[in-house]
Amino acid sequence: MTDYAMIREQVKGLAEASTDYVPLFSNVSAILYEQLPDLNWAGFYLMDKGCLLVGPFQGKAACIRIQLGKGVCGTAAAEDRIIRVEDVHEFPGHIACDAASNSEIVVPLHGKEGVVGVLDIDSPKKNRFSEADEEGLAGLGALLDQITDFSRLSI
Ligand code: SME
Image (cartoon, rainbow, N blue to C red; front, side, top):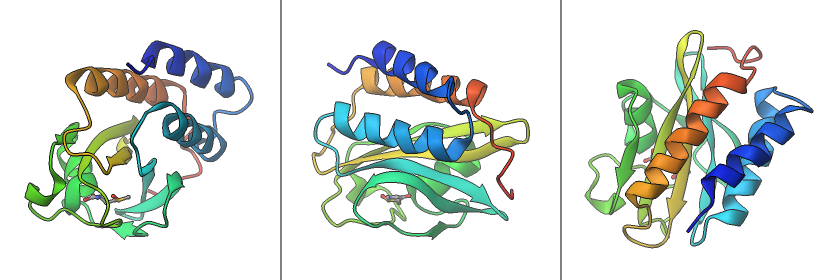
């Protein structure tokens, strides 16, 4: 089982050097991609002039812009809720950046202005993400909400 408490401690350590979202989220992507088994993508989409723009990530090249309300990421951002999808092929409007993806979890992130982006994690395995993963990633999202400097975003 993934040790999310340890991941949070690693992230707090990284934030001592910089809380700017680019260096912090680059390293968070690397940590998640390395420490969660069976992933094919882990990273961030951040708000940019009213839509989601791809940010730091690990994995294959991905879609660059996602409209709010579209796909799993756009829906999670528009509705400000975590979305855990057992089988992405059954999610209406799912955006297939990588045909190998079968399950996905998306966690909205918040700054002073409200939703500022999402953490998106994909797996080639169906039903990869458990309730425990959802709790762990919700905790990580809450930590990132608290410590991240989003001031360079053009929301
Ligand atoms: N599948 C996502 C798009 C982003 S990629 O998977 C990296 C979605 O439906 O929002």
